[in-house]
Image (cartoon, rainbow, N blue to C red; front, side):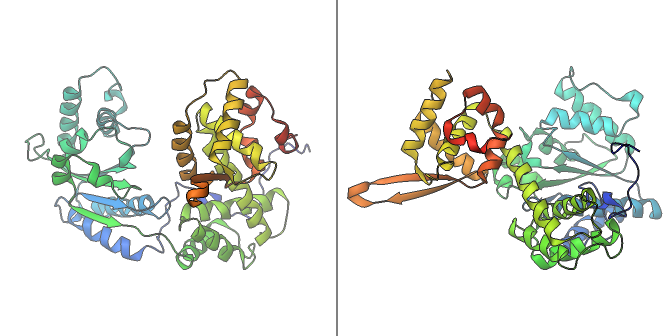
Length: 405
């Protein structure tokens, strides 16, 4: 048998899918307070009444979307059991980011495939009319969830949906909106007329602490893994790392999954704390790479300039010296050299992404005020992610020892 043949492997998983992002467990642990409040907000639907519009806030990975899937699945099943006509739809606005596209998606999601409309070529007013007709044909309570709602480029659809009955666009259907956002200030950015009509109830999801993350991981472990294949300290270590990452359950679950994958690839008999630590390094490297690949070329050149100082242990480096190195790299490669103001603005963005650390120093009348900059990620990971930029611009001597072979 070739080593590249595919055959099922027993160890260590029982149901690996239970650790993936789209998995909804039968019970949701660690979110009791939030679920109670959310459940109460949705309860009117099973009583054949329209729930209030709801906004969910909280950082990434704190269970907003998971709680929504969990409760809506239960609500739809209860509707079937009690003869209440309830329809739900979740749309992620990161990919469907205009009112027009949201309306088209809503129409098509509730129509048969032969009756769906194209994504372009219709006046917005006509699309809205088709949406109202589609909803009234359902003639039920419809709960529409706009996940990552802060990605919407305009709020027309929010106003239209929240005022549909009042404006006599709907006769039989009743619409409730659920908005999910990581941006705690999103509601304040809405136009006054939308804010007054849509924001009826807000639920804040706090970050998981280490104890709550242990509950989440323990529950998924019982589904995802075979019995007795995890060392005792694997779950606590994954939970501790997740708590350090702003209480992000998704990162804790990803880490547990990665540890299991590494143990499987190594043909080990048990998943250990060492697999967790190796997995964390790999995930950090992948996250750094995704962040850097999302930068434009000028930002990557600026980051490249910083790596040349990091490679010679010359950081933290004053921003003035960093600009001179950026200027040299851009000029040598025939790229436009942007201003120092541009650099300072984009250094702040790189800091927000967790790629650099900036300190502001004040040496008084003798030295004045200035910034120093350093990488906040492993040099090898940053150089690896910048490989294409480095090759196109030219290899600076300082980073040659750190280039991947």
